[in-house]
Image (cartoon, rainbow, N blue to C red; front, side, top):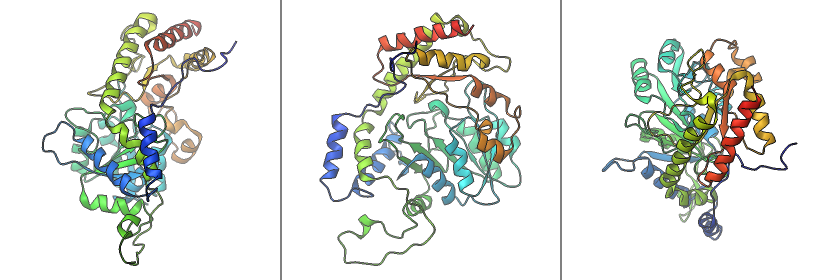
Length: 399
């Protein structure tokens, strides 16, 4: 019989009284939309991205209404458009490819590394053609893609890079952080992210002229924002290019600002829980002892590279048993997700992009096998043990 409700939810946010007090403070202020609170958050996020680097110049951060809109605005600001191709990965949420299509360009999907699910630089290089304009890597599960290799490829061929960093702001690999080597890095503050305001996003860039255009594009292409007009004798503003209504609001920034101080400590808690999962699962599920790779070398547990934001904890079930395992976990009240099915197998992209099954075998196998388990700072060890025991039963029942 199915459980009456979740025993362990897939995700719980950590918003509390400090965020509520910050929100109330903005309710008592003049600006609710694109005002001083957004500017303060942008400054604090830029400072976070260079934490521990003495004397380092922070990137410019531009708050947006979502990561999805941030990706689109970043591509537009880099003049990616009709006739262009952008190389990206099928192991991502749909918004990555949506942004390319909405910019008028064509996504070109390439395969991923078997141990990480991250875009494979060798596959990127092989896919470059005369219409290639850019690369859109996804920092999957909070692991940074191989940005040094991708930057070399981009520089060799005159390409731009927009990083999809929806899975975290904390990650680092080979001394590189989001926004260090890409032309722009785009973050998500959606409900299930490590810092959240329900939705919202941000773009980080080290190119000043690009940041100025990003600010225009997020606000209708307007020459002067409301805060720039406030308090002065009235002056006419203008629309200087086609833009979007896609800014972060002061109310959302008020929820985000208190969380910046907790990013590192909460990442450390998720890291400890992830390592505990790995140890307990290997003990409880014989199939996870290993490595126990598939015929294509995909491991049972994702192998992080460098410092992961640990936005998700993902394991890989045998493909033909994955859905049965998901059903079994759901019946026991364990919240799960699939991050992600390879997007070229989704109906719209299958029809639009025409990538046949079998063309991207590593991504397809990961997409057919992946299961994400609950992972958040307030997850208790007792709850984690319930999850591990349920996984063990599910694997056993699925044969």
